[in-house]
Image 1 (spheres, rainbow, N blue to C red):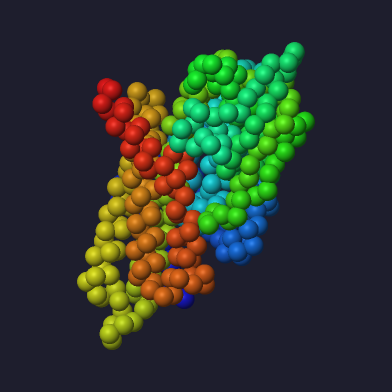
Image 2 (cartoon, rainbow, N blue to C red):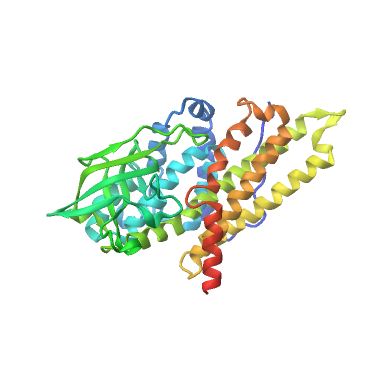
Length: 390
């Protein structure tokens, strides 16, 4: 089996500060030393890496987007996507666990939560002692998130939730979830409110874990609400503002998916280069055949474009076009990474179809990047809608 050493990073540093470059190197070192050993076994066994996640918490990687006053690392979005990329290059499932806690739990609480809510919950999340999740998708509400049916009714000093959420990353290992529920059945999208729900809330049950195609070392399961009581002070943002909070959260979280795709793409390219140098056919390494060289050239070119798009979107989070830029980065990076994994596996030939080769796992892991946090089709809708509206 070919050994795939890291390829050099792009000559474009995209303005990474000394601190950001140190962060990138440290995350890569941690990923290679602590995550890579046993990654294939954890995937095969569908085993969540609890000890490794705890270590990531100690390093501050689970509170990257939380302000320092609430116990977080206070990093900016560019630092965050750099870290996600390095984790995903080694284990996309672990990168997903980290990304979800940061982007769809910590971030909305930090931006829309009351001061009391932030001081009560963010320090625990930022410390890495617990994980977070996000409950928007339902069995009948995926791309059409505004059609969600989970309801919340006010009962004294509490809200009572009933319904079901589907495909919830970190369900079963998370302690807190940001959940969207309908508080006004007649108000359509304006009748949705956000809540922060503890995993041990009475009436909340975690369903059976999904048997997934990829990201098998990450937990994904339904959330089942049956008269689930949530304290009124756990309401996130204004009454009826849940849909806007969900969209803003997705706009930001797509940066993490784009970075995850870039990390997978980077590794697929490294594996293709290493294997093509080692594999001999027709009397010479296949790296000397034009067909293989052109595949590698295309993979490398699209990788650079995806990285630049992702980092450009990360430094533009305060611009009016931030949502569109994040969608563009997520769309291009995820589809380019899917193509890269396809071509890398093709270069591996029959060996690529074997789980003994790392590309087999990447090929399964990458597929979801073009689906979750909004499918490629929905990204095209978001991009075109904003351009045409503007």
